[in-house]
Structure formats: structure tokens, C-alpha cells
Length: 189
Image (cartoon, rainbow, N blue to C red; front, side, top):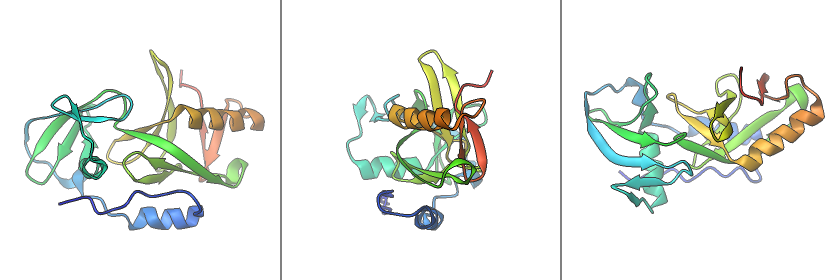
């Protein structure tokens, strides 16, 4: 079954319009599927977000978007592709998804921020989709909770833009508001 949802485009839309589009997008109920683990998918999601199968990049964006709809993160931190009858492990080098662009409305505590993901989906940061910064050997990794335990790492320019806003607003610790929630933009101690 091909992926039929076109990627969500943030450009020219209000956050209310984006929220409606996000709510209308149906995803398979992977959280309810629990078949036995039956092997490896021979797939890998590289740190830069490129999907590979048997060492070769998957070039069809619609195929990657389809796989992303059946992807979830297990309680032990591993990632799987799951259907009602199969569960296959997939290697994820950093995070399963990337937040590539963003748009925001409002300022300070009244701000809301929407992020477009490389999976074609969009997420509005808030209490259900918190933004955290994880310390990694490569430096801070800003991440947005998406669904089913999955995270999207923010593209570096987005993180810098948010940090610039946070510093200008003078919060201690530096952070950003979205949808009524405050998110510190430094790794937790």
C-alpha cells in the first residue's frame, strides 16, 4: 500500500490550520500491534536521516514516508518496524526523524512552534510533544518527541534560532515557550 499522504508544508499556513491538518492525518495504530519479533529489516536510518536497506540508500521518498508510519521505539530504546503480523528491528544511529523547518506564532509564553519533519509529518511542540536537549559526544542534541517513543532531532539552524530567541528573552535557564509549556534549551544535568 503506497503512502498517500503528501508531506505537510508549513509555508503560508496558520498554526490553527496546521493543527487541523496534523489532527486529520491518520497513522497506523502501531502502539496496539504486538506481534512476535521475527528478525531484522536489514534497514538503517543514518545520523543524517538517510534510510538504507542492505547498505543502499532508499531513494523513493514515498517509500521512506510509508516505512516511517509503521516505525516505533520500544521501551528498551530499540526501534522496530511493526505491522499486525510482523515486528522487525531497524538500526537508528541517532534519532529516527529530523525536524527540518519550523514556523511560530506569538511570543513569550503565548508562543507556539510547529516543526516539519523529514517523514512528511508536522508536530507542534507542547506538553504532548516536549522539546529536550540531550548531551551527546558530538555536542547538544535538541530533540522533539513525536509519537510512539520516536524523536526528531532539530536541524542545527533551528536550534540556533531557538537559542537566539531564548537568550533575547532572558530566561534562566535559557529556554523557549511553545503551546503553554517551557522547554530549557540546555542539556539536563
